[in-house]
Image (tube, rainbow, N blue to C red; front, top):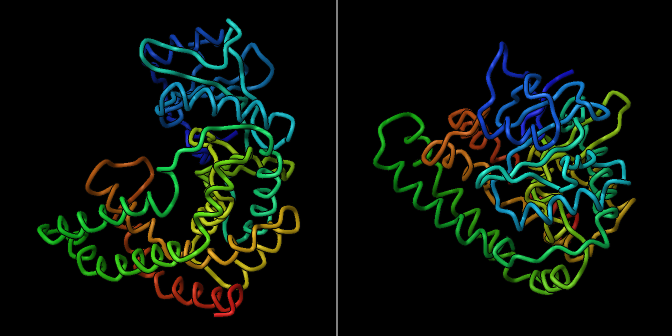
Length: 339
């Protein structure tokens, strides 16, 4: 069985014997897990053949106790859906364990492979609609800072800071980033202008008042297909109320390239289960313009490295794929908005 890192992507576990840190050992003890059998997988741990039924994934949580309370509540709400791994309770009957000043939680281990896009895109979008349907009826507090127009104002400022930093650098990444930055900043500005001129505020108010949450980190790496073909959503650490469109956009952008017919087919698969608000359909082209990958490459290069992310490769893929993405956005504007 393959391993799993906290983002849900299936990777090989760390080879050879590795002693878990004291925090992981204490967390495992809170769950009654055999600390000698913890298998490191990135920053999480897999416990094979736990005393409970099946294997367990033990994860540290970095977003604070309030978010952890709602994230574990979301898992419990979805437990009967067959779309997310079941939450594992501590020996004391708690949703999560506090170890010193840190928090840990555990779920059933889901074996399989992460979804492969674009081959699995239609199935992924259909499963996402089922996820959103099952997520209805559970309240999570709304954070206005998560709304894309607000959040992307901050990310736009980041892009300009990264551009300035790249202009003073001397390695190939700096040069490529500095040359490409003006075009990607224009894309971000155009997308924000389109969102500001749209019914986004009305949709956001509806989300704030409703009782349905989204995954909010819905990428191919966080969707796992098991040996029976079932699609599972893992890593609900940042789950919360948001437009369904945002989960769709993240999923579409987590694969290589965008092709209009594939995107429209995936959208049709989603809406065969759960129709989008017409305004959300119209916002899809603008949301696809937001240059998240270009921003993320610089974050991983200039701020902090991420396991499995090669900033140079990601930057080159983003720059190379930009013309096809722009063509796809234009085609979708014509198909969805008649523009």
